[in-house]
Image (tube, rainbow, N blue to C red):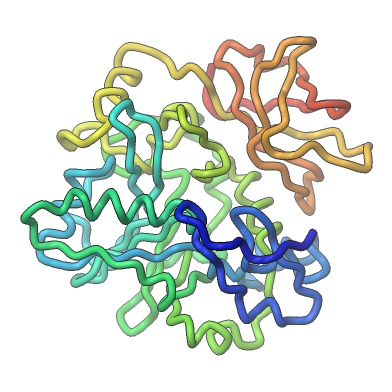
Length: 351
């Protein structure tokens, strides 16, 4: 599947195609992953190599923001869902920007180097995240900058923080838990524990040299491993009314007793008094047909629409798999359908 770079709009910044799209066999991704390779001709082999730590992924379409100034961590702590005031240098975490009603607006991959806080987020929504942060500066000693043109992101199956003298790196600690939080999925036996992952921030002019002769995998491979790990992606698994509980994102993105921030009331109320109205599920799809359903397609139980597919992937061992969001009271043992395709559920967020 090929695409051309997105044109520039206020909501969707133009993407300059990665120089690694010049590698043999490269096929450009589409939608949120335009501008980098979906694959290089052999997605299943690329996936195996990536899972074994023998390949890297060009994720240079992701956005990189920085916050500098002596008040940067306490300021971000006051605005977002994670405890950040005492974040040690080169220690990774993640945080969410929520709407006043507690709906997820942005996910921030957060790592501080002792002088600068680095934030990795989705390219399409980064301008809105930056604009909101800028609007909340007031008189504090902080500066927000978009460094996407200066730094490229590379994905690696590594769980090690960057050391002094190395490029700054954000380690995905999914499935956590991180800090004082709550789990809406399993405490033991979580498949995400088998997926080491980090994002390395490389000066953009050094991207080709950093990759060097390493094997390259495309975003299709990275997305398949993410789905198998039940790892939600904001922008894929979310819509305008998603709350963190529905995706089990409290386990790594929310500190429950850190003080006030926008959207905290919803986080606390649902955690203490209620249940999320929807829940994330993992699906094994019937792969006997030639075409798989698409993200956004309806999921049905009989004639009733109970949810929607969010990410669809082909796993090198498990075959066609997906993540989906369904109504909380959907029978977890039921086989769902999306068009002619049947889908067997595995519970991620307990009903």
